[in-house]
Image 1: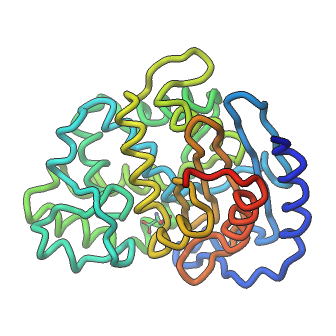
Image 2: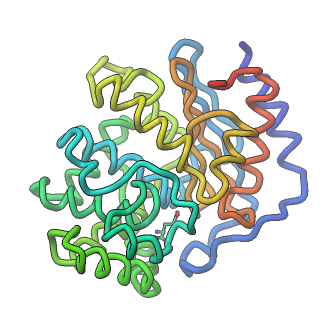
Length: 304
Ligand code: GLU
């Protein structure tokens, strides 16, 4: 399979299509990004790696970090994390409060904000230095010791994060947050502010395509079953209210973020990261979605 030729061809095509998306502006700092950026990087298990466009420029990975924080909590605590959150698509917006009332403070899944806030709480309870330890985990996965949080983006989100504050306090009222909500939110905002480029992102996620094992040394990050389960969650819950559409058009597990990044995983084959900052109406990268749809169509490879 000549991934390079396929990526080059689709990149040239999508680069010039009219971008009907909008920059996420509810986090003020995200609106300063150059909306023309467009980068792609594929990391494969057997056919090498390839990047094109702005694939070495860092961006705010936002909700994509929710997969990595889940992986760390799952690695450390195993199945008992599922007592604190569910595994069903929510069918409501990613920052919604309504279901929590009827569900007694148990978030529907780890990729809506409520679920990621509970995972942040779990990590705070079990890590000695949560921010440093999480960073060390992601650095080891992407083989880059310089990855970091963006203090500007975290501060910017803190200023407008009223809904996340409400979510965290609401969950705490049901007893499903153990720590001080201020500390939990501070960690959550930092997680969302993590900056990575497409190359680092596709490298960091490659263990999801490799049955839970890091490719450089075969170290087990997650068991095969755990990797399968997180891939299943990415498939069903990874794209806001468009997860069905992504499965329908692209056919791969993945996760997007409001910074315009998307990571997609083809188990036993590759991971591919795409970044284009303008978002469609559902909050997913407009060009990123278009690119990935063409990519699995042209390569005739998907999990289905
Ligand atoms: N930090 C963002 C928020 O909590 C994450 C949004 C996203 O990428 O889904 O609103």
